[in-house]
Image 1: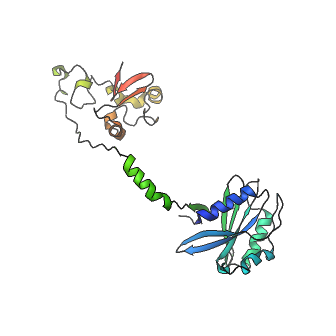
Image 2: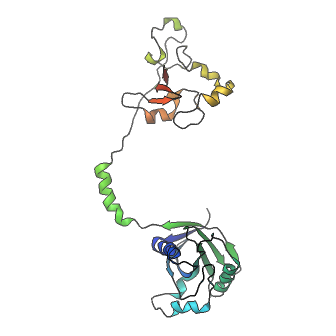
Length: 267
């Protein structure tokens, strides 16, 4: 499992909103907390800076916003975030230079670049005891929806009913399989027994469907998934059959212009 970078909801929203509101690039410091084996960005701090629509350069004076604020723990500043305005997210030469400068102050540097399209790219650079760069980190936003849980739980309990099916169907062996002439059922659909070799079964010939390449690709696609039927038309052997069966033990649908009931064509 690869390393992930976790970002709390507030700093993520602030970063994207700043990118949207500032018609230029910008730089912000990252407040990072290590929680067991996770690195979590829990805030961003916007320093004083002068920028253009396509550049924002790091300056040591930017750290004044941290040193002058007693509510900020300098030990938690472990990286930076910047926008590329309308451009794509990538690491420019200026970005690489900024990461090297921050590496003189920090044991590791978390870097994030965003843009107005809400794209995001992240990496971590380790500087102690030697330099390692972990690029294209997977990021996970820690959305805070706890305020909705109680409200939605009540609404779900009131309005949502989950329908479940339980079937104890077991196949019944056909007593006529050795002499079909004794069978008096008019069709396979009227028969209570299971026998895919029955001559009255419309799909009995599908046992050799593997040799019918044209038909297999054209006619015998699963009407539920669109994939080639793995049971060669024997729907009762398919787990989807029991998920879609109705109260009257039928599955009704249209396929290739015909009405289909259970696994029999209704011409």
